Amino acid sequence: MYTVFLVDDHEVVRRGLADLISADPQLSVVGEAGSREQALARVPAAAPDVVVLDVRLPDGNGIELCRELRSANPAQACLILTSFTDEQAMVDAILAGAAGYVIKDIRGMDLTRAIIDVASGKSLLDNRAAAALMTKLRSGPDEKDPFPTLTEQEHTLLALIGEGLTNRQIAERMFLAEKTVKNYVSRLLAKLGVERRTQAAILAPRLDKRGRDRR
Image (cartoon, rainbow, N blue to C red):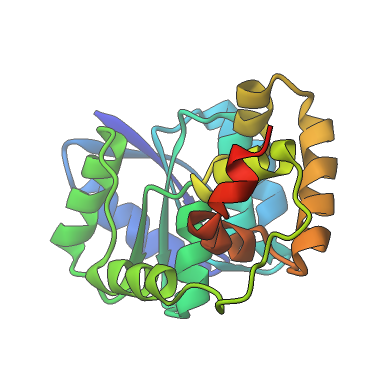
């Protein structure tokens, strides 16, 4: 049996989801939260296989909460379940490490199947989320060189951000302290002239070969 933790600021929604999920013999709801703060306090103790969370929370953003939970426990699966269909939010969620992004008009049977798939290690996307991601990645940035002054280390950092790794995972890959990586990421974003790591990740596939080959 797979265990599930629910994060949504509407109690009625949480109750409905809990009833729906608990009706499946393969799933059990082990906790719930109505805010980011509650989730950060309760999820570690509940140790669920999957955290199902909304994007909009009263004290934060569900996508950043996903990133925080996975940074603390990379093995924890997060499934975004929301009515928020903004393309940027979909891309942000995927790059934050969410195993899937589904819209709340999904059928009940499809939702429980999605949770089971995510719990078993599969990565899935609602068709609309997949289409949004592909459109965003294909569009890319404009043609001017966005990396005129990046160092070799910054090229590496940008590539890892492009892979959707958390700061903790990047720290392990680059043999650095997590706090150091956080500072490096902030400087990299400033250097690229962007505000969000998602924007940097979209630039990553266009890394200039000459910059990467620099020695």
